Length: 213
Image (cartoon, rainbow, N blue to C red; front, side, top):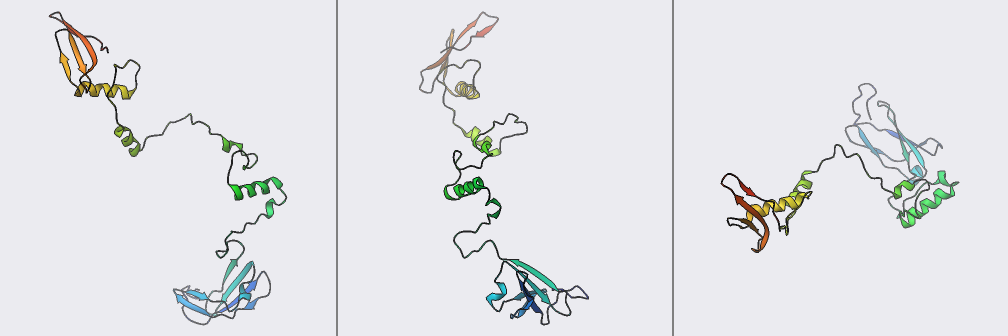
């Protein structure tokens, strides 16, 4: 509560609390308001009759303070009951909506039987054709870079996947390579042949041909 003259918190005095249940009579509450601090007052009701309704208005009055009214609506959630109440008055005349609500409550969503009529798009997925502005997260990039690449088993051809090309570069960089005056041989990790390159040198140009298995 706040002072009528200064607007400051009212911390003393003896406020009177009135209550009105469901627009009934304006009655005086039997409880006693207690100041808790910084102008906040707590009021304990004297009996259940003071809150036995769907809408209770509590008005706190003190001659030196601004009168305040708090409206309390009790219809709705009750933490003491197992099942939450639901006001379905607005769909009582709509048999389909009532049946849909019952199906959702009892069995959950099912695209064939438990769906609201007119919402059939929930059963289909439309492919996203415009992908401008999307980018991989740093975790996604790490997942790609950490994915294992196996040793190639044959020479790749164009066009080819990035995985195949990277595997081939890895084999050329790591594996054993033997050289004769006519042939370069790239070995697999087990030292069997992965690919060969025919080589030649006419004294002017050295040539290594396309790899073959």
